[in-house]
Length: 504
Image 1 (cartoon, rainbow, N blue to C red):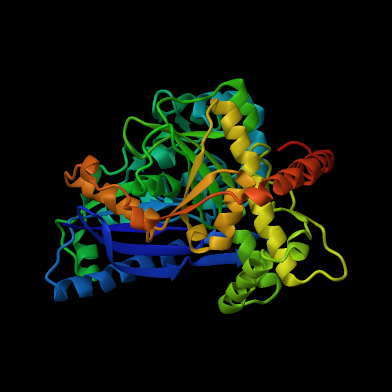
Image 2: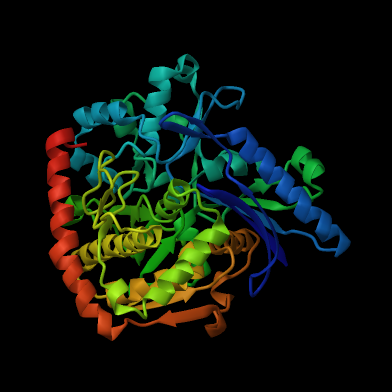
């Protein structure tokens, strides 16, 4: 059996074909995620994303016919928060704001005035933030005249699944990122939505990830060359799908998902909405595996910080990779390695434990002799320190120690970054070098839609794993740098910013 997993990501979109039961990658098509940038504002170009997805399915279909292969099911994963508002003819209304676009700050403040931040957390399990879907809906209603008559809101993966099947459904893990889901009851919170003047019927019936919502429409089948009998499912939130791909399914494990952002994910059996979790701004959610919940926190800039560096120095990828090789070589030179600096990567605001859209990046340690490779080293160190700060919060909240950090995504192709993670976190880091982990997780959930038992999936083979252990000679030095420089600078920066910008 063959299934397709689609990953609608911040930077790239992937359409990938996998074979069961091993879920090995057979073929793929990827394209840069189309965006519309207007000054400080960024929208997803949803129509071009749809056209790129269709083109990718057609490309895969062409090679499938030659091999006499048929596709049993397709499932779609995506970033959270972002979505599409539809009119009564199912046409998009207004722009599709990216998940990180900060325009809805005013709308968030109005919602907080009505509901209160602690009440929002107790109901939805997530900290009030302008990224979440209800704020985007309110922004559209306040700024796009036609939006007042909007009929349906679908998150990105849900919208693509709708275009494939003609069926509108909402999936639980994505619903967890709307700020409209009652997490305990697993229903849309009608009272909350009524208070903020969003019609509850704007949200579609809820389904679990991997539930078949329909089959390909005749039109899509004709455009792609696939069959109308191909089942369609929503795979859900991309980081959650990545956890399925690596077999993360118990509370003893933790996943570090890396890409444009970087997150820590723990699978749980219940929600955690106590005052301690609220203060740490950690997000609860419904996991893509039925019966489980999740704790998830995202750092807005990871791979994005690296792209920012490349853009700043006008550096193409081969030049960047050569610079990373230089950093590896410098590790053998104590005088170079001891030139320490701090980068706090708040290029798109800060993540937990102090989550704010107004937080700014900070780079300390440069002088008149600083070279690009030194700044890049500060950036990688800063990403690791930021991750350690988040990991410390997780362990304090859960009362658990996570001796092994499982990593998926872009960082798995960067041994320098992985070794630095192991040393700064002082943990074993296991790089799960799975090709297109999010798409693989989506393809596994697609197979679930047609009756495949995911418990029969083989575990990630040892050949796909690479293990990194802390450099014992460097652990104490980095710990001192974290305690004596990173933390004081972090706390001072956040204090100054609170005074300048106020709470958000």
